[in-house]
Image (tube, rainbow over all chains, first blue to last red; front, side, top):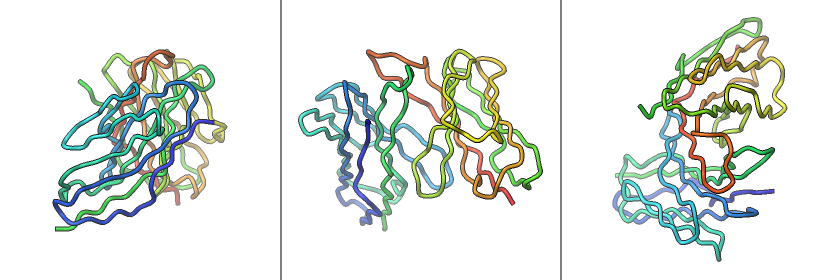
Amino acid sequence: GDSVTQMEGPVTLSEEAFLTINCTYTATGYPSLFWYVQYPGEGLQLLLKATKADDKGSNKGFEATYRKETTSFHLEKGSVQVSDSAVYFCALTTISGGYNKLIFGAGTRLAVHP
Amino acid sequence: DTEVTQTPKHLVMGMTNKKSLKCEQHMGHRAMYWYKQKAKKPPELMFVYSYEKLSINESVPSRFSPECPNSSLLNLHLHALQPEDSALYLCASSQSPATRSSYNEQFFGPGTRLTVL
């Protein structure tokens, strides 16, 4: 079945460091891809999305490009801040039982220190 | 209004109690979802409602009983829960339940943190 694999955390960085969180997927058809972020004690917020190959999603300095040839959607940010500390989930949508379902990766915890 | 609201924010209940979680959205979305999230894990889908009808039940125990009274409101009734049911319960909505040609972004609420004693 469809699945998402993320790099294991935690990822610990100093402020202003470069961030990469790897995400690869397995899917039939042409899924849409998402990064969600979950700050401590909160629900999930959509960070960015891409709906077709070579699309680049971007938001708040974060970017990810839908790479069909490598089945990847890696999250990057050029300069992280302490406020970026959160858990990041890579996800795809798949059709199951006739309905769209979100398939999540395991999540990657990011800790940014001053 | 692009917000999904959930009440209460926190809930503590005993194993013999009956309680309900509430979720509301005013985006005109016709699909609504309940997820359960344990600590340090991704959300797990519990139920999907499509046009106010239960469409997917992911083999959830009957002590969880969903209800969709109208297109804006989704409830989760809880009865005789177990301590292992303690988790963050997330509600989400999307514009329509299923399309094959485009994505269907889900908007999440802040969740209800449930503790079962």
